[in-house]
Image (cartoon, rainbow, N blue to C red):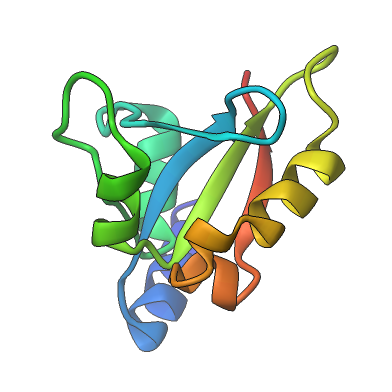
Length: 116
C-alpha cells in the first residue's frame, strides 16, 4: 500500500499540482459549490493525486462567482443513489454559459464521485 501511495505521489508530482472544487446539482442543473473538509480520508487521497481543494479553508456559502474567480482545474460532482441523474447534471454544467471560462469545463474534467 505504501508503494502504491508513493507511485501516486510521484505521478502527481510529475504532472504538477491541480486544484479542485466539490460541486453538486443545486436543482434544475444549477451548480452548487461546497468547501468540503480537507482533514478527511478523501482529502488525503486527493492530496496524493496532486489535487488541492480550492475552498478547503472556506466556511459558509460559496458563490458561483467565487468558483469562477478561483477557476479550479477539476470539479468533483457529488452524486448519490436516488439523487439527480449525474449525466444530466454534467450536460447542464457543460452547457452553462457562465461556466465556460472554467478550466474544468474547457478541459472536460468534471468527475462524478459517490457522496458516501
